[in-house]
Length: 205
Image 1 (cartoon, rainbow, N blue to C red):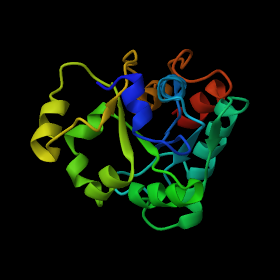
Image 2 (image 1 turned 180 degrees about the horizontal axis):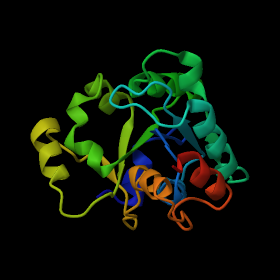
Image 3 (image 1 turned 180 degrees about the vertical axis):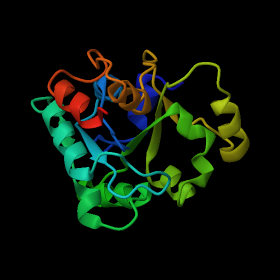
Image 4 (image 1 turned 30 degrees about the vertical axis):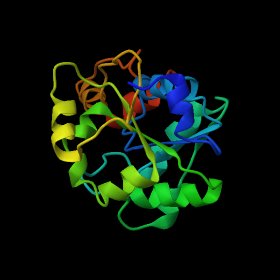
């Protein structure tokens, strides 16, 4: 795990973080990751980018709905921007294109934030070596007891340039939230109150 000073040395220009995902729906775990990422990495800006056409899975909620929920949840949160870049670009939403776009916009090597489980299949990401070269990979904890680091070390080799965030593990998933809504259970505490009732209705049976 890198120290604060070591993290700072990884990026000497604009300190930009990119937090992508399906956000289907956005939940309180995503908000906590955003808060900790801003604090630990001392970011100037965190760009939240909902996927438009994901390469590995399909979303349940349409892009417009997921984007609307993100805007409501992060409204007023300093230094956070919700971007519809991937919709505007069109096509399959490969992360490397998003990284290259914001790298050019801000003239910097951005931090790219992913969940720890991504380490178990990161070599399957499109142009994954370019992702490691053109961004600083930042990993937040997801699940205990899974050998994600061992797999990543076998496939990627040296992990010393990857930042592992020291933050609480939040065991909430969008899949679980959708299932709770489907069977009529409350989502209180699972998703921010600004969107809770709307999410319950949307994914409800």
